[in-house]
Length: 204
Image 1: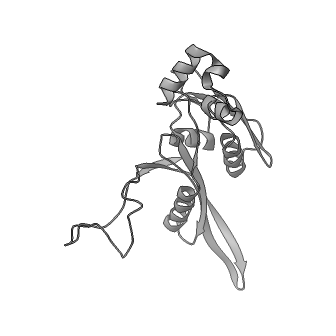
Image 2: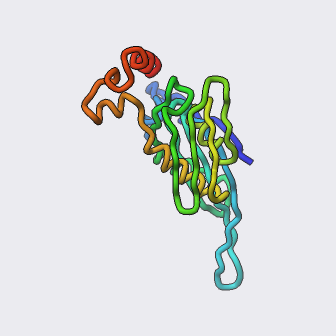
Image 3: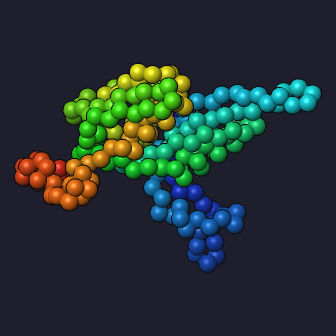
């Protein structure tokens, strides 16, 4: 079951010199950080065989996004569940990617993602369709800020491979503006004047 929480800028209380700080941590980078959506995809109990028995720990898989086109995933292991979640969240924040969205609600084109035994298909959808996807893929789209999409996993049901396949496809996503810049053309040359004006207004 996917659990969700919002993580805002953290820091200590105000000091005498008017600045904020806490625990000796430099929070200048987190001062302007927007609220992030954190979704816990799953927790597994893992065991390490050592002399005298087995040592148990926990592995957490977390999705982090800002709801405006940036998303990342992380995996963390520790002896306790909160520490494993913290490690996974920090890794997800460091590896966030930006995905271009059409009208801020859906993808620009059909995308296929592949990683290992994981194969996923993602297609843009009309307004009001909602997120038609399950499991880890739904968590990615909700954290990313996508409102309308149709997605299907046609490979393994392993959440790690599903997430990596989804990110592999999203990293290859492009907008008309990106394609026009890559080809040295204008957006109107690719889509026509009317559609180009609609795309420009939606992206601004």
